Every structure is written in structure tokens, then in C-alpha cells.
Image (tube, rainbow, N blue to C red):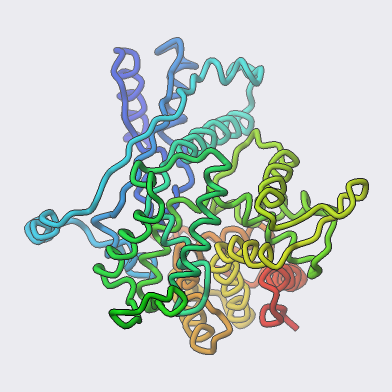
Length: 461
């Protein structure tokens, strides 16, 4: 294994030395959730070592975002989200794929972010390879990788499918009226425009784009329209979504959720105050909590000024009439009736993630009896999630996601709620999960989730 690694590293460095351009996916694999996968550092580390060892004077990375209206492999991806193993590609699959290739899947959008130079990056932060310790070097690789991923996100395009999917999954209800869809779509669209996000060219006519996208989703059997043929009242035109189809929509919602996170986080922080009049005390702390809690889910801007983000979102809310300033000196605001609905729409984007993390916390009760292998514990978590959904304690079917459960496990292991033990047997690495002995950590996080979801279901007694 070590021999292969050394040969591969030398090969890559030689390519760099000879001036070849390289293309690689820093995530190390395809996303099964629709969000960007967090970066893998192996190949990036080799490339940065090539600069350090003199194979070249500098390397310039060009982040590239590729967005699709529709993804061909969405069915296979969703099976993996639900816990199925990835199937290896075969000749039979290739033959069967001919039918898929005859269908239309919309457009592909390719966008580039500003190039990133290793030398410029090191000069900016006064870094030098020669003075770095191993931990500092790894931290540099990680920081550079996260900046690359963030810039890919920044270059990504808002597609019609992504926006409409996010709108429909705002609510836990199985049906949503056309009037609601239009209202929430306008809310999200205006916020994204305010933030300067990039839209697909089809958004030149928002009304027409919405109609066409809903029709395509209906044709794909993701939505069903309940209305008489002559029904014109938008309140009476209801779109329904089955449980399994929510997973399709979740995939596309995740294509653009990062663009709405500032509004979702700040809306959640405001609504936890449980009063129509509120001040800004603690809002920045709430944002820091969200960024930490979901650090294995989303990529953030390393240079972001949180206060500027808060000011920008509040300014948008004021412009839209969602909140009004009551007292300038005390920074006191009041939420309007319209604002309560709008802020609830933004917070709805996070519900499936909060529920997924809470399901993992709830499953820690199994660990009090014995330890479990990673595979078996994930099965236990999924089984518990399905039970809680049937009991209507968990509202979102899309919260039962193996990939989100894995991220939650990583987070709660880091916080001491769960203990991860790795064993090497017969040359194979096995992972077991045990009780972390920190029940107060589990209780604290369950209370926080309960607070953000504004329900009493999620606090462990």
C-alpha cells in the first residue's frame, strides 16, 4: 500500500514538472445527497508537496462548479441514502442505460470561480513550508481544500428544479397549495437575488419557470396535482408528495441549500426567542452554534464576517416587511404576521437535518447495553428513524438518511456523546460504537434541537 502511494505521488509530481494540466474532483467521489461532499486531502497534499519540493514554482487551481437540471443516476443515489450498498458498474448496466440516454434531462451548467494560487495563498497568510510542523501542514492542506470547495459552491448555479424542490420541502405537510408554492418561491427568489446568487437563464420569467418545473415534476410522478380541470383558485390547486418522492426533491434542494443557510440560521435564531418583539442579543452565538453543529454537512466561508452576514439578512427582512425596527438604540425588532410565515419557511429548510441528528442521539440508548459495529449501528438508527416517523414524532421522511446519520455520528463522537473504537483484525479495520459516558452532552443537544424545532418531542427527560 505504501509503495503504491509513493509511486502515485511521484507520478503526479512528474506530470506537474512537465507542465501538464490536471483535472480532479477534490471531494473524492460523487455526492449522494446533492450537496458538495467535504474535501479529501490526499491528492491536494501531493500537489502542494510538488511546489514545496521544487517540481514547479507555483500551482493554480481553478474551482469549477457543475450543476444539472436532472441527474441520470438519482435512483441509485437515493438507494444508497436509504442504506443500500453501492453497486459496481457492469456491462449489463451499460446496455440497460441505452433507454435512459434517450430521455431528456435538461441542461448542464458549468461555471468557474476565480483561480487560487498556492504561492499567493501562502504569501497572504505568511506561511512557509520550511517552518511548518506536521500538524500545521495538515491544517494548511485542510484550510486550502475548504476554500476550494467553498469557491465551487460560490460558482454554482441556481436551477429551477433545485429552487422548486426547496420550496415544496419547506413544509412537513403532504400537500401544498399552488398559492403557497408561489409565495415561498418569490420569498426565496428575492432573497437569492438580494445576495447576488447566479440563476439559470430560464429564470428570466419566474412565473413561467415555476409552471414548467411543476409540470415536469408532475410528469416524473414526484408530485400529484389534486384539482378539477376547470379549477382556477390557486388555494384549491393542491400538489401532494409521497414519502419516497420527498427523497428525490431533497437531492435537488441540497444543490442550493448553502445559498439559503444565512437566512435559515438567522430565522431559526430569531424564532427561538418565542416573542414577536426581539433583540439581537445572542444572535451571533446562535450562528456559531449552527456552523459547528452542521460542520460535517455544509461548507462555510473561512473569511466570513458574521456580523456583516447578520446585518445583510436583517436588512433584507426589513426591506421585505418581515421585521420592523422598534428601538434603534436597543436594537429591538418586531416580527410581522407576514414575517412569521416567511421566517418559518427559511427554518423549514433545516428541519430534516435536525431530525436526523436527533434520531442518532435517540439511538444512543442501544449503546448502553452493548457496542455495535458501524454497519449494525447504522441499521439500528435507520430502524429507529422509521419507527419514529410512523409515530409522527419525526415529521420528515427525508430525515431518515444513512449519509446524514454518518455525519451526525462523526459529530457526536467528537463531542463525547458516543465513543468510536477502531480494531485491526486480520488486516481489516473494523469500527465499533460504544456509550460515550457523557449523558449530559446528549441531554444538552436534545434540548437544543427541541428549541430550534419548537416542540417538546425532542428533549430527553
